[in-house]
Image 1 (cartoon, each protein chain N blue to C red):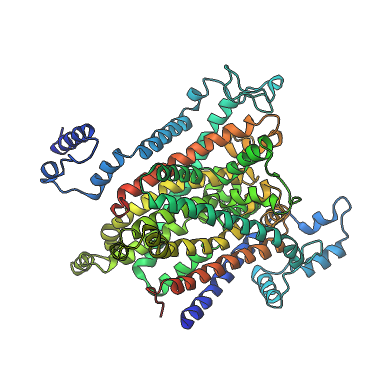
Image 2: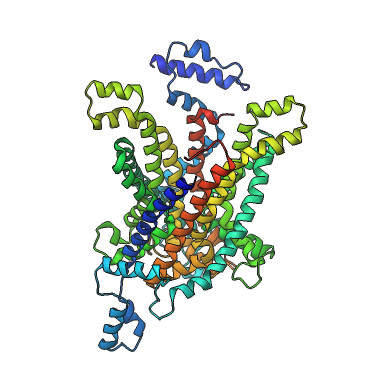
Length: 323
Length: 307
């Protein structure tokens, strides 16, 4: 165990014993080390129940996406018997059966994988696009910034769902590789293409704020190249706000994916997806409301996991917002 | 101020053109042959197809088509759909529904959001404050799609308080979809009001007001609220533009014949002219209300000067 870990552990133990926070051992424990933004934030996060609820849910759905058969209790989602069609939940089949008489718990559980894959992939593409465009616009300024910022304005003016809807409707008839696949890749790209602007604006404003600081001038005086200054000295400042944004956006884009799939342009049958389940269930909302309720519930909990983690992360990383 | 508004107006032109061209370029690639589909079971004669393709500029390159479209736009002609109905008529028929829905949504958002935010902000860390924090997190996390079905199920089918589809019962039909459409912004308004109020309550001028011996009510209503509500009012203003273009799911689920559902139906039916016309209109609303809000900001808060 390193000294650092020992110190952290001691701090944890003291904190666990104090409920008022008045006896916080900030003086003697932290005097001989530099408190970084991240260690402060982690200390803050550990005490936030919202973060733990979000994190536990997030891990739960992650495991569900990796090994769905465990959560489905070994039932094959495609093993169906029409005799069971729309049967209500029971002790053996917690979520009941769907229209084709397939076990609904298994189907809902198997839906986690595509949602998470699309949500995470789309956010990764958003980050690549947003950070690259935002950094270039902020660092070079002038005409470059003008053009790139107008480009962001153009995309920003189009509602996410609408832009992705048109692109996914058109996609299959084009010969652009992933876009014409009608698969998870197409949905992720469509969401990222109409959702990168906020990340770009975040990075751009951070870069502009830091660009004129003394340490950047010092790096430049030592002969560092533009790219090195950008990557090593400026961008690390943007990590905190971008991380918060990215966490929440995973949830937002998972919801958007379900919506697009519900509207008929996202994932297509025979894929197993919450959007498809809600779409199929809405016709029998009176006779078998569980067909809409269960995928809706799990979808909401998944989105909530990421929103909660992002909220807690923001509170932890931004000391100004602390009460 | 005049120069600022003029500059902002000029900046909106490339955005408006860019956004409509983006949609135009995507719609241009819409699959299938809409002219052939028009004939249905009895195929149209090659001569008729020829004339129709000519009329809709279907054989010209993309930029020529777009130029023809913009030229029409400036003379108030948004073109016709493939059945010959003017797009302008379609917009006139569907826009009032969306406007009513947006008004209901904005009113609900302002009334509920502000009330919750003010009550939570005045008493930080009270039970009500925590209730607002938890319920806003919950509301933000529920996808519009899910919220629509939940409210239909609960208030429409179980309790029977509100109609769940169509517009037959006047303004009454708009309450449920309005609430669903406004939900996300409503939660945001509550949180924004709460944070802004709590921040201002610590300001020096509030301490001065208290030191003068003013009653608590006056300090909060006259001094704190006025300043705290500036960001909230501007958010609500900008949200009008966003809601006018963001009702695709709500209108589809609640079966309201507004521009959101119309654009969704048109995307499916490959009615390019209708899609481009309505989306351009939505983008215009979005930009317009953002501009209004930016100007409003300077009017409401004298500390901000744009010149």
